[in-house]
Amino acid sequence: MPDEFITKAARCPLPALYSIRMRASHRGRHISGAEGIINEELVDDKAIALIHRALNHSRGEPDSITVTIERIDGVEVKKIPALPICTCRINSGEAARGAVAALLNHAGIGASTVSAALNIIEGGADESGAALVDAATGERLDTESTGGIRVSRFGIEDEALAQFKVAAAGLLRETRVLEAVMLASKAASGRGVIAELCISDNPGYTTGYVSSRGLGYVRIPHIKKEGDSKGGRVLFIDKGADINALIRYLRHTPVMIDKFGGIQLASKELDELIGIDNCQP
Ligand code: PML
Image 1 (cartoon, rainbow, N blue to C red):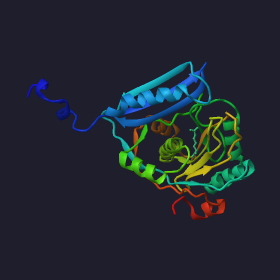
Image 2 (cartoon, rainbow, N blue to C red):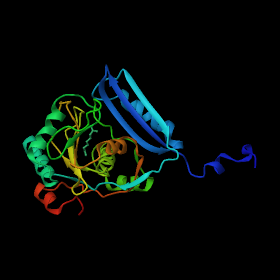
Image 3 (cartoon, rainbow, N blue to C red):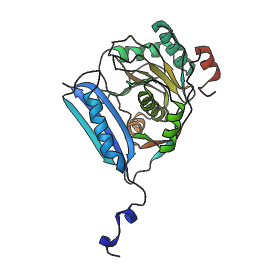
Image 4 (tube, rainbow, N blue to C red):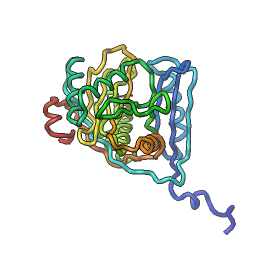
C-alpha cells in the first residue's frame, strides 16, 4: 500500500511519548527546572505550564528559559515503582539534622560523608543537578562538569498518578512532592545509588527528604530556615559503581513510574521509621 494511504493512526497505534524539560536561569544562576514524560496530546499544555512556572518562581525572574521537547522513539522505556512516601515527625532544625544523620546512617552512610554532603548543599555553589558522592569517603565523583548531574527523562503513568492524587488529597504542595518523589524514585533505581539527600533551593520551602530503596521517601520538615535559598541534592554512591554508566542512566534513560508506592499522611517518629525499614504501613 502506498505510504499516503496509511493513516497516522495506523502508523502510530500508540500515542507517541515526549520528554519535556524546562530550565530557567538569571545571569547563569539557576532559578528553576522541571520535567516529565507525557503523551503527545499534552505537550502544548505542559509546555505552557512549565513556562508559566519558570516566570513565577520565588527564586526570581529568569532572563533565560529553555524548554526542550523530545520525542522518545526507538528507546526502551524502563518501568519502575514509586518509592513509598512518609514524613518524619520533626519540630526543630536541630531535630531535622539529627533525623538526616540517623536515616542516612541507617542506609550505611557515615557521619563524615553526611557532613561532606551538607557542605556541598549549603556551600552556595548554586548547582541545578545532583552531586554524586562516594558513600564511603564523601569524595565528589561527578567531576566532568559543573552544576551536578541532572536526573532527567522520567514520568508517571496515568493510573499511578490517579492513585497518588487520591491518596495525597489534603497534602500541601502535592505537585512539588510528586515531582520530587518521581525524581527520587528514578535516582534510587540507578545501579550504585545507595541513598539521596535533598534540600529545596526554594527560599520558602523548608521540607527536604532522605530517600533510598530500603527507607522509601522520607520527608524531613524544618530541614532549613525559611528564606534560605541554599539547597541541592546529593546522591550517595556505592564504591564499585560504574559512574559513567550511572550518569548516562540518570540523565538519558527514559523511565516511567508504573506503580504508586503509597503515602502515609500522618507523620511518624524517627525511631519508628528506622525500625520498620521503610515507609510501608
Ligand atoms: C524542590 O523542588 O525544590 C525539592 C522538593 C523537595 C520536596 C520535599 C517534600 O515536600 O516532600
